[in-house]
Image (tube, rainbow over all chains, first blue to last red; front, top):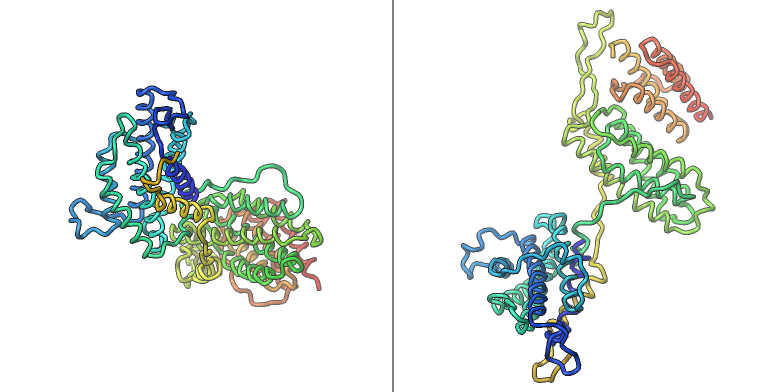
Length: 435
Length: 98
């Protein structure tokens, strides 16, 4: 997730910002109490490695800015016409073009380092590289609100500032290549952070981005309500594959029964869920009626239908006395919400891609049947047509849930303020040495 | 599927669906729906649509549905499958009893 990788990135940079004397931290001279353990060539090699890790982190900043500010012809824009986000996008692009370090190799990213300073850089670079998934899978310009875009922009601006501050401190490392135009980059990053601050950043963006796909809960059936949750979860995972019409009907039928039985179980422990689940039962009853004449041979869904039947069977076995806490039922409710969303998505896909059809009788007769009674002519029509308007409207009205209001993760908020403090409370040079 | 088979199947589906709609209890309605699903599974999901039936008397609906399902044997449907369907229909009716 964006929040997870951003949290790791900020944690490592805040750690690095707290470290001031760099040469002794690489085994070099500069301290009477710490012996010199590395040669100039070794420190040079370590410096080159840090520069590659810095390159990966700068690349993350550029990708973050590009994700929320696609820009366009930035090079052709004059400075007066660039917004702060355009300017940061442009400056980061130029810096990366002029630095020669390049991305670290996979071995470098995965091998633990001897010096804690280099290790912190490695962790930061690793988070930055993993963060690339987030921009492809989540935070793209169209999918974010204005507040969320501002949050990403602010993160990128602050991390850029941190990199500039660190760059100044690392000047004494042999063969260190400083960031070209770092003063200007720093000014731009500060302006961009202030610009984003005015736009009221929305930290719920932390929940966006790549996350590992849900896995099946393997093994035999778990006892009691846990077995019900297991089967419902597994059904949801199997529904990731598009089901054919018959299996979709089996799943819908299973959800109708499960909603009704779960409402009976929730009566004493979680009365707040009873009405919701009874409503859900009615919605699925309507869907059962509306899907009776739906056909469609494309897709699978056999395992999903089997798990739906498992859910029904296991829920029948659960005694109301076994449930003493509301938590399992709340978990079941979460699974119901996700199942509803998935069923709605399947219906929409089936309609949009013309994978589900409805057989209808036409107001004409089969006149070539050679029978005394002419039956009505039948044909299959896509479910998008007016004959099946109810199915789509029920799906859109009842199954689509409002997006959950999410806030930023507590860890994300903490590391944001820690990094900001590290940037704002840098020690005065005249205050004396700090190790 | 030949036309006569389709007509019989449509009749069986329509009457089973009507039984599900008019069932007295939730469990009976669910069981009738399962008969309908099983009927459709036997035909690979390629089925004619249901139509409105002219009565809501359960005994009439049941008799017609049972007769239509029995008739499916004449159209090449496996006799064992038909017997299983009839057993399911009977079970559903037992749950629908007042």
